[in-house]
Amino acid sequence: MDRPRVEGRAAGPARGDADVLSAVFARADAAARAQAPLSRASAETKDGLLDDMADALDRSAAVIARANEVDMNTAREDGMDAGRLDRLRFDEDRVRASADGVRHVASLPDPVGEVVRGYRLPNGLRLTQVRVPLGVLGMIYEARPNVTVDVASLCLKSGNAAILRGGHAARRTNEATLEVIGEVLRDDGFDPALVATVDDFGREGAHAMMEARGHIDVLVPRGGAGLIRSVVENSRVPVIETGAGNVHIYVDRSGDLGKAVPIVLNAKTQRVGVCNAAEKLLVHREVAEDFLPRLAGALADAGVELRADDVAYRIIEGADIAPGRLSHADAADWDAEYLALRMGVRVVDSLDEAIAHINAHSTGHTESIIAEDYSAIEEFTSRVDSAVVMVNASTRFTDGGVFGFGAELGISTQKLHARGPMGLREMTTTKWIGYGMGQVRR
Image 1 (tube, helix red, strand yellow):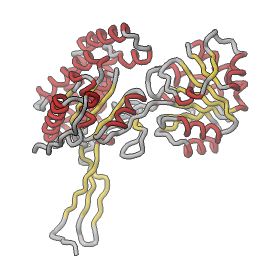
Image 2 (tube, rainbow, N blue to C red):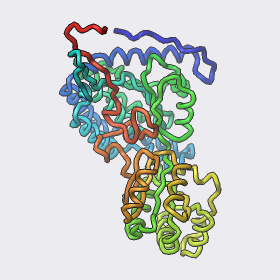
Image 3 (cartoon, rainbow, N blue to C red):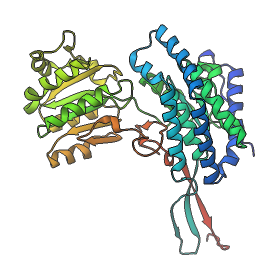
Image 4 (cartoon, rainbow, N blue to C red):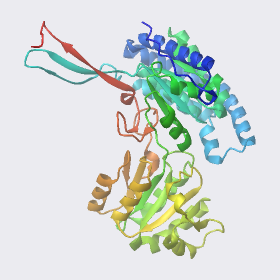
C-alpha cells in the first residue's frame, strides 16, 4: 500500500523548487513501495542478496576505481585537502574491502523480528515488543564513496530502503557503485528503487530530502561539522545526528608513557581525515616535562603541527623539532576539528581539569585516557560524556567495522535512539504486538 503523501511547504530557491521537491518525494515514495516486500523477506533471502552484491562489487572493482580516479583528479585540481582526498579515495583495494564488509553484514544475525521483551498482563493479554525496519532512510554525506556501499548493505539487511545524496566530489564513483547495486537488486527480483540517489539534483536534492517529512522516515548526515549542523537545523525529517570528531586523548600522571607515544601517534596520523582521529592532547602537569618532548619529536617527524597552550609551548620549544611544527594555540583551537596533520596540546593540573575541558569542548564522539591508576580510569570513563571512551587504546578503534558490525551508518553523538557506531540494530525501531483472547478494557 502506498503511504499517504505529505505535501512540502512552499520553498524558495535556497530550499529547492517545486519540481525538485516533487521528484525527490516521488523517489522516496517509490523507495517506500519497494521497501514493503523487503521488510517481509527472510534472512536467507537478504543474505543471498548481499552475497550477490559483494561478488558484483568484486567483479566491478576496476570499473568503480576508474570512475573514482576521475573524481580524485578533479578534486586535486579543485584544491581538495589531503584529509578529504583520503576519504574520497575508492581504489580497487578499498572497493574489495567494502565488498568484504558486505559479506560480513550478511553473516550477522538479522535484527528484524527479534523479540526485545515481552510479558503477560494479569488479564491474559500477551505483549511482545519486536524489532522492525525504520522504513526509508535518507543519507546526506560528502566525499565518502565507501558510505554508499556501507549504507546500502546495512539498509538491505535490516529491511530498509535508502535515498542517498553523496555529494558532487564523489559523483562519478557513486554513480558507478549504484549502477552495480541496482543491477544486483534487479537480478535478484527486487526493485532498484530500494537504493536510490538524488545526486542528479545537486544541492537542491539535499534540500528536498530535508523537506521530505512523510516521505523519508529518518535522515542521517555524515560529514563535516557544517554539513551536520545544516541538516540538524533545517530538516523537517527526524534526524540522527552523527558527530564531527573533536576527539581527545588525556595522558594521566599514572600513564605508561611508553604506551602513550605510539597510541597518540596512531590516533593522530594513521588516517587524518576521519572523525575518530585524535585532534587534542591533554597531559597531566606531573608528566608533561618528561612526556611532551618525546611525543613532540615523534609527531613532528610524522609531519604534525602542534598548537600548544603556554605551558606546553614552553616545554616543547626546547625539543629538537622542525621549524614551523609548533605554534601558540588560540581559543578557537580547542573547539576545532582539524581533519589534518595538526593537534592541539594542553597541560592540565588534574584529572578533574581534563574531564571538565573535554566535556566543555568535545563533540561527544570519542575520548581516550592513558592511565594505570584504576580509580583515575573509573573516574574518567564514568564522567566523560561521549559516545565512546577508550582506555589505553587509540581512538581509531571507534568504527562499526572494528566493533563487529561489518559496516556502519555513522557514529551517533546524540543520546536518543542510537549512540556510538550504528549498525544493524540501530537501523531498526520497535513495535508492540498484543495477543488477546477477547479481552476488553474495563
